[in-house]
Image (cartoon, rainbow, N blue to C red):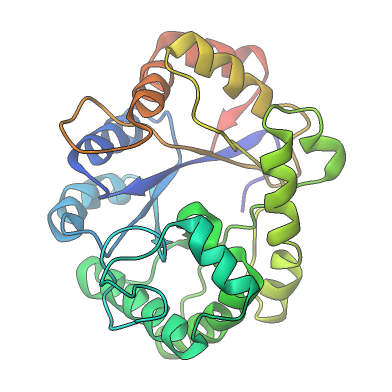
Length: 278
């Protein structure tokens, strides 16, 4: 694992669409980010995986971005996707709180996505996280831990897992405090739960955004705030993309992130703060 000031910067949503995948591969090649997590229920995953493998051979970590809130599921799961498409995060959370989601369906879909990653990639993921952090919500996390443990027993490889939580005295000093606080509540206990299965997690988490930034300068301000009071094993997430015709609700923010992360200013900002990308 890494220690401060080495920081794991993870680009989420690989294979969501071409613009995202191109941006992530470019940033990995430039050593601007540490790794990426892939959405394996997206049609692009097999072709984008092949393009990602040379970068993994050069040290980039590649994880599984478990997804229960966007796109088409890999299994039949009527409670999660009643119309054949995953319901948005707000709906899924309401159903979770009301006990309307079928846990067997959740377990089956999580297992199918993990198996899909292995079938295409040829190995277990380096780490596991979740689209919109759905993996850390207690009901989903309980099923996920059992699924991951069964695959560890088969493959003998233990991935680490993202804990999207941080110390209160850290998140209160960052923008988007309310979103970070809610996420902390929903994901509370992730590290402790993972440790029962001897799965390691990050210790310190930032990069939470409401995706209102539309320029590199605006994202720079937000990004620099993520470096405030990093934990001992810190992780910062990002969501870059290059220009694309894909329908993407947060595309302007993604473009701004890529513009800053690929700039000389980003390198200078990290150097001035003594932060190294692991």
